[in-house]
Length: 358
Ligand code: ASP
Image (cartoon, rainbow, N blue to C red; front, side):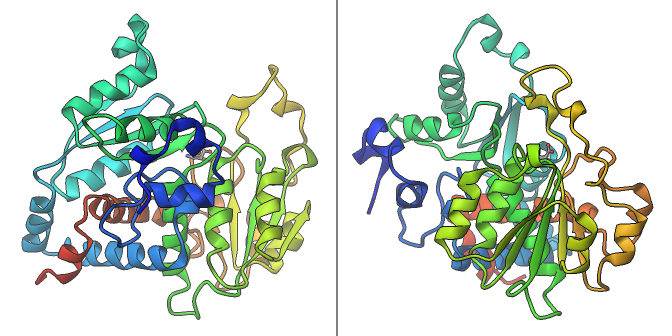
């Protein structure tokens, strides 16, 4: 059994992600994450368990009795939502997931309203939250902060779990979970996710959801990944290195229409210009060929789907919104169910919910 209390921060942080994974698991031997920090913590077996639990929660919640049962499951827990970066869906769906399970929540969404404004460090703020809450769901522009805090808290007298709700340009593991859940549900009655072709399009260089989802797709058999972007925004080398090491088929491309014709899922992303190094850097890139509209829709197969982590700008035309293949609205709601599943299993309630009488 690996524990974060048995390893110093320097040694832990030097480990490859796949080796870090064991330190972040719950200690009951079931392999579920305790701290959720990056996509590398999830393998196929865990993804299947989480999707099954999300389906179960969704079903139980349909009846009033079931919803009341769910509200009692974690009524003894409190969660802090600490979002020091803008968010609509990730914040609200985590909040809604907590509410489904009866968790009491608190939130800080703007450091200017907390003691960070008085000069308190993020680290001290998070330690403060752990005094009052049993879980910290956090989004930060700082890559690695959630991980550092997971180590710090595990080595404190209040070792509460950290759930990474987006860390810099790096990872967004719970978005990747909801993306997988959406793919699994979309292809459930059509032969499953194995063997599919998934195209990523847009700002693949700075989109953290792309890095996390690309990794989770490697847990499936023979899923081909196509990366369509302007050269300046192409997918980073570390993502490609993982695909090569795992023998995953991939293609770097710049023709969205050609890719759409052969794709089962097209995952659009917005230009992440908040990370520009100089003013107007992204605006100078020609992104006109990396937008999904009526012509691309006509090329997508009848079972194909369009996804987007949202928010969108103009990379998906609104004329696509009512097409049954537009999955981005459903993705949002799927986020609530899979996050409820993750939170319930983080606290060790997976089996209880799976086996309850509803
Ligand atoms: N909402 C997603 C994220 O937080 C995607 C985006 O902002 O473009 O990364």
